[in-house]
Each structure stands twice: as structure tokens, then as C-alpha cells.
Image (cartoon, rainbow, N blue to C red; front, side):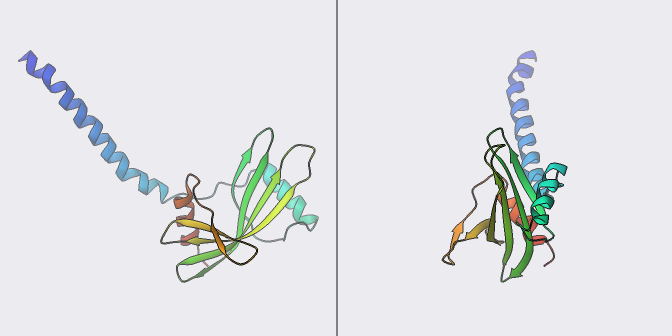
Length: 151
């Protein structure tokens, strides 16, 4: 009987692993469907408000979308003015970028759109054409969030 117990351990382990993976696969889409932008950190709020006061960026209800803080680069992404039409949500994007502590803030306004059915983002080029802006982790969840907002 002990041999049966030893022989069944791999089956029990396999059952446990597959059950855990299956439960995780079911839970992850539900968790990602609840993604929302993080609260704007005080540091970024101060930078944004300073640039708005200086007239460098428009005073608008900017939604903080994320940031990167490294020794050599500081960057934050914002969006505003969401406009839905035919399964797309076009919006104003804003990238605040600083390459070193001594350099001034670079401000890059972007016109972007979320293609809701495909979970992709695109950026409008200066000639009016659209270029893919996806490929970063979490893009699908962010697009889902954008597409669920009231417009």
C-alpha cells in the first residue's frame, strides 16, 4: 500500500499544479479588468502644475498614467480629453521627460487613440497617419480602462 502512496504523489502534485494554474488563469483576467491609473504622486503633481502655471502645457483634467524614475531619466505619461467614435477612443497624450537633473523638462504632446476591439494604442504622426504604440506590458488592460471611461 505504501508503494501506491509514493506512486500517487506525482499525480497529486500534477493535479495540484494544474488546478492552481487553472485558477490563476481564471483569476488574472478578472484582476486585469479592474486596472486603473495610479494616483498621481505629489512629485509629479508639482511638476505638472508648475508647467501648467508657466503655460508650457494646457490646463486640463490630466489623468496620470504612470511614470519612470531612474537616475538618468524621469518621465511621466498623462492623458486627457477622451473622445469615443466607432470603437475607438481618441485622446490627448502628454509625455513629460527629463534626461538629467540639470536639463529642463521636455514636454511632448501626442494625439493618440485606443483601438478597443484590438487592445492596442496608436500615436498620430505629423502627417496624420497612425503608428502602433503598443507592445509595453499592460497595454491591453490600459486600453480596456480607456475604452470603459465615460466620453
